[in-house]
Length: 212
Image 1 (cartoon, one colour):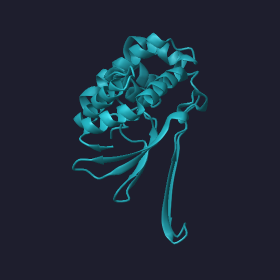
Image 2 (cartoon, rainbow, N blue to C red; image 1 turned 90 degrees about the vertical axis):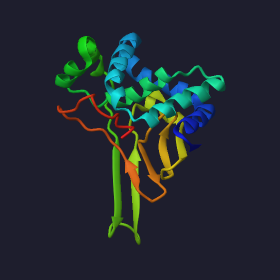
Image 3 (cartoon, one colour; image 1 turned 90 degrees about the horizontal axis):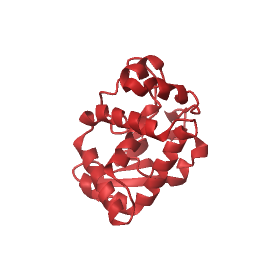
């Protein structure tokens, strides 16, 4: 993908719109198979996005708009709202602590929390080794995305190479519709491996971590 955020998004949507629709459906299945009603999931996710959106950098919102446009031009029924929900759902596994859920999610929090206990544990892993620990001191960086394998999101895995105007080119390793970055490396050799963490100090009033 290359160009402005909107151009890169449009290219992405044209190439992977159908795969993104599949990822969204599979992501929702993680929660619905745990007994969470889809309408409740959408209410909670939409409320979370309202908190996150003011902190989302404009270039990612432009990219999302481009993805929806490109997907629709090639026959996929994908909207910006669908992509906002996908971004938000990647944040929800960070908020399992009851004291934070009740504060952040409002009137639906208690019912949501009941079902969240049934969602299989998510436990991503990362490491990096270099120097005396490797042959010739070479750097090896690794991250696994340990979501629910039965959901099948790994079937839509992607390596995406971005060449954004005015920024370093980079490769992002993730899945279709994964705006931002979970793991990757830029043209200067800097690697990124992200994993979630838990804290009672976490808030939704901040940049979604996939954008950060």
